[in-house]
Image (cartoon, rainbow, N blue to C red; front, side, top):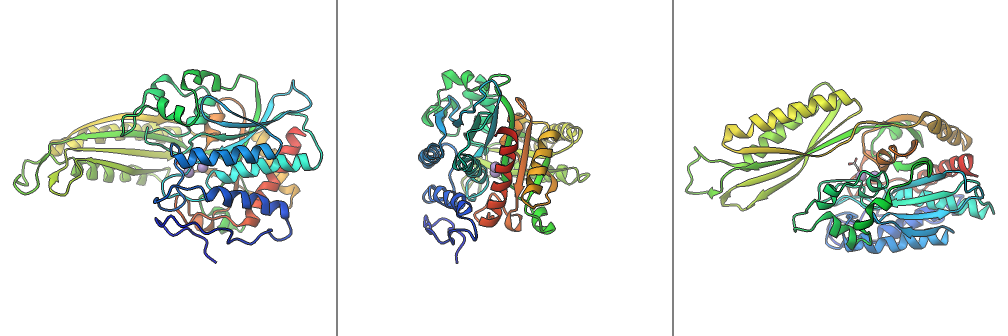
Length: 430
Ligand code: GLV
Ligand code: MN
Ligand code: MN
């Protein structure tokens, strides 16, 4: 039984998974929804790629709209391109309970990072309605636009707007093709001129719950099915531009070159060293662009993105300073000019204890004893935390693999997460 889409072939294997999931038709439903969404991928891209501003992502959200609608949610798209499904409560004076995550992927990504939380949230609402209930508290299910980093250098576009943190400067950011973020948003059905209206009014949200795959091995190693997240690492991202000089790769002597690629290589190794110090954080260069990127030309320009993460704000700010030193010293040794600009700097986020206790009790109610874990991956919950208390549930990721085609969570594990989420929704809203 194959469990992966062969990289780069554009071939999607349909319905290879067993349905219904043992003992639970409802569980099979969430997984079937996940696999339906997984068929909507960018042709010619590796893995299960559905990047934020791709036509496939836009098309895939018609499916999310349909699933939300058939679950009984009133669906709308806000000016930031978020899809919001509302199940009105019987007590309109009570602030809404929000459930959400994202359905975009990284290039070459998998099928679970993001969609798992959206599908489980839709299913939680279905189950409430199937029990014949109407919640006391209004419930929103949100598919946030573009959680993963994009060509404009930012992540969490939709949740940032909901928090009121998507600024006019963000909207003016330009991608490699000269398009602004505002233009890209409009192509996704958003309305950048009305972006302020995407901000959730103060007091509108009582709490936010997000189910997500762990993207690590801690649950698998402990043999547990669920974790309640205690905190989410802060992430700092900086763009580093290195300006050297283009020269003929044959005729320019080795001495005296200003090679931007070699400066980028040295900067990247220094970034690795920043992550190796002290065990309190991780640091990565995952993106590098070269101009002219030609085999017989010494690189004139290199642009890279350095990102680092930690649960410790003082480690992050010390790393900011060290990175600035690296950029001011390392490239100049090669006659290359270095310039750093910050793309984003998020502090670590604490999940709300009272809300995490509800998740803990809900997990125990369905017979699970969850781990309590900090998240090293970023989530929409970080942005939402500016508006209301947030809490998260993790389900296992096989082998800890994520942001790659092998990303996998068993149908039964998805079902356990969905049941715990639904139990928490019942406690908080019904
Ligand atoms: C989101 O997937 C992140 O942690 O980068
Ligand atoms: Mn991700
Ligand atoms: Mn995610």
